[in-house]
Length: 278
Image (cartoon, rainbow, N blue to C red):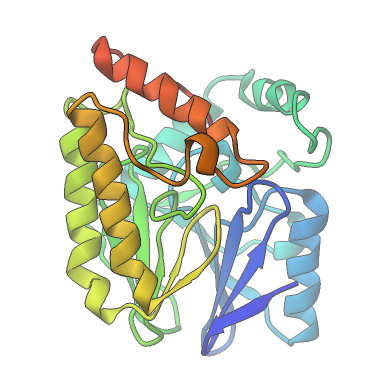
């Protein structure tokens, strides 16, 4: 069920990895960001929109990880945007004839096997490089593109509502996951991305991460600082004091410690990303 987090901005939280789909009301339709993971959850979003007399005017994928490239037929045929680099990465995945089968095989190891619709996977419309606003008839939505986490990753700032849709950053349950294969300096790229988010933090009343709980204005800078402290600990090759890993990790999220261990090892030996999707 959609839950309002600000005027005209609603969130649907999936039972899978607390994945957040975000709906922004426009004049006639809605902008739908990262619409969900499981078939019945996306159908639920479609039902809620129908009940409210709304249709999807545009979609947006914050980045090209598989769980952010999904769509459902009942959401309609509106353009699904991504940054130029995000869309290129999605197209590169689709060029592999085994891509969808590989995702389905990976999901066999999870509780959502057989529940993820892949027919419309990755069909993005690339926005021109350097685009800074979503092209749609609704509130101004600023695109904050950077090089952290995944190619073409972008946060969105719904300026008139004070909502920051952070993609796979600023989570209360996931540590920063660096793009260790895609950039020459993943540590500095991540720190630079955090600075971009810090630049708009004063305009944010609600932050919605790709996975985890939405936070209020008091949480925005706190989450930026927590993510920065974690990344600096990686750079300095020391154990981070982070509540998202180790004994203090939230029950059910203990695997985040494995994600941390994997990327810490790869950084220590100069390797790349550990490949865990999120």
